[in-house]
Image (tube, rainbow, N blue to C red):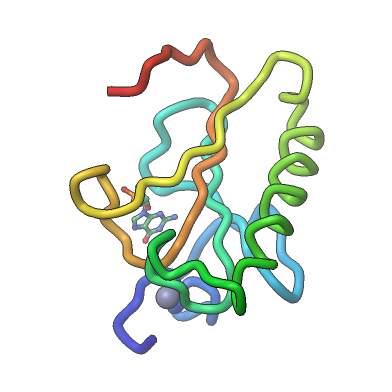
Length: 114
Ligand code: 5GP
Ligand code: ZN
């Protein structure tokens, strides 16, 4: 998608701080972190939101959760805990329409979310 900022980040057209990368996904630090750890994990394939997940592309979702657990372990969060968040749609706070999961941790996290 030519006008998608996360596709541009994957291509390297927009700079980002890479945390992890493989054939299927890319992880990088959020530009406006809400916690000491705030990593975004995105599929390399452009999927606009969770609404677009289907039988053809859903394999990457499980992979992303595997990668999230690995990143959390690497950053020392496994024991203390962390949160994986997806905002689907404007009403839920989605601002970038390329599917992404926030991996947030490194501080006490409140629940329920607002
Ligand atoms: P959403 O609100 O869609 O769930 O999350 C989008 C996230 O992308 C926000 O936390 C925002 O700070 C982050 N973000 C938006 N533009 C950029 C950017 O150009 N670079 C990085 N690293 N993060 C971005
Ligand atoms: Zn995209």
